[in-house]
Amino acid sequence: MGNLFGVFSPYVGWSSWGLNWSVVFMMGGILPSSFWLMGYPLMTMLSSVLEGLGREFKSLLSGFQQPGSLLVPSSVLVFIIFSNISGLLPYVFASTAHLSFTLSLALPLWLGQILLSMYRQPLWVLSHFVPEGAPMVLGPFMVLIEIISNIIRPLTLAVRLFANLTAGHILVVLLSSTCGGFSTFLGLSMLVLLFVLELAVCIIQGYVFSTLNILYFSESETKVMVLK
Image: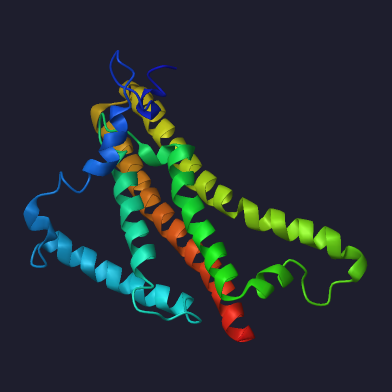
């Protein structure tokens, strides 16, 4: 069990230093300098993908079109995808497979949306806890339900990301240990297919995380714009 969950340990060596967390901040440094040039093939492909995602994010942010409004979700998307993919490399710490890391991403984004809505339209934020047309008798219960549903949003975002990544890494370890009983070609084929599947999961989970954050923000901002 120690080997199975060893990749999720944030500590290395006898000194119990959390050196593995430094991988999170080293992802950009390990890329060659030519990667960041627009003529580089991978950078050109990344730019095209981000442009397509930017158009989709703009459609989701129809009620809030401000300069730089796509900077945060696009940056979060790229950061999560790079973090997820780095966890697939041998001997690399899987940072997004920890609830403390994913919650530290989801909580500030959610809190920023709440504070911005409170600043722009505090009365709407309070009135939103009671749906329109709800009976007065059910008012206290509806307020409690709405408060809970809003509070658990960052938790669901964080748990979804870390649970999928954790399950994927454990599955890779389990299947890689059992593939030794098969022939070389069959075992290698299974590992390649599993790696491609996990690579797709890494990209999809980053996309889902960013899209849900945009939807939560767009929901509040659209209603604020309607009230104005």
